[in-house]
Length: 318
Ligand code: NDP
Image (cartoon, rainbow, N blue to C red; front, side):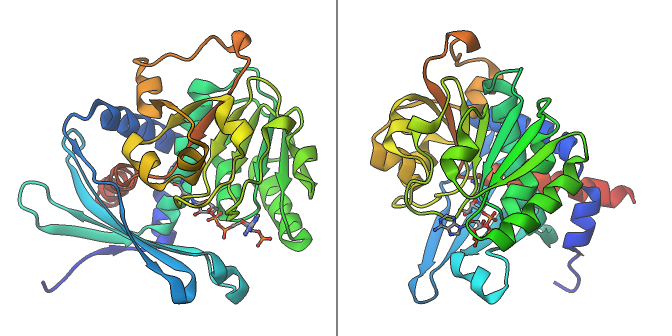
């Protein structure tokens, strides 16, 4: 191969419209849950114990969208101490009719925003339409992307951000204030229970590997988007949250292999988000909810390749 186009992060960022991405991810989730014309094995993960890192390979084929490709992703929770981002990724797309490689692009921006877009689909279908208070547990990259995308889903008036380090927390609150604008109150919290109390939607985006969110702090009917804890022995959500919730996942196979919150709590998986979005699995009406709802997100290759295809098609029009 002599030449192979590469789309850098700056270009992906310029082309990705968060609102459009919510629709793309919703369609991808629905396609996946129908199990028609979609192939996506659970990701293969190699651990790098010496450096506390993980490397994942995530291929997928989506016939309807004419997308074939794979993401290579690494996550190293210790990078923060070296001032290096914890996640790195590249995505390669192939021409489905011939298998010829088409393009390689940065996968970090897509990982960041497609994850928030999947949470946005959960908020759209599973939170109270009158939700006013969003709580974000974590103050890293995903905290910012979730604020950027979720602001398009409900009329949030307050965003509470929890962080461990006061310095990182302040930076995150300042960044989120700039993202969402003056109309939304953004507050900093170092006590999780204070941040969570009364919140309508709670997003957990930390690198915690033990439960950080306790059900005893949450109000009935609250929606949790559990985004971190992507390893079978990691937790963010305690047993109270998991056992008093309608548990909805992106992929049943993925959740039963990779989610410590699902596996270790022995909570029953009620549905996939694609089934809820398509209306083939119903949740009880909002005002009758005594339980919580959890969307346990692990991230899927089809989210990456469909987002990448959208970017590739846009880049060709320029
Ligand atoms: P970042 O490294 O940017 O941020 C991580 C955050 O977690 C920081 O606020 C950090 O705090 C905090 N943190 C680190 N260790 C702990 C701990 N032991 N207890 C509590 N908080 C901790 O990561 P991202 O924002 O990119 O990712 C956040 C999570 O989301 C990760 O678990 C990641 O694997 C997951 N993820 C999930 C995806 C999905 O599709 N479901 C996709 C991408 C990421 P401090 O600032 O104090 O260091």
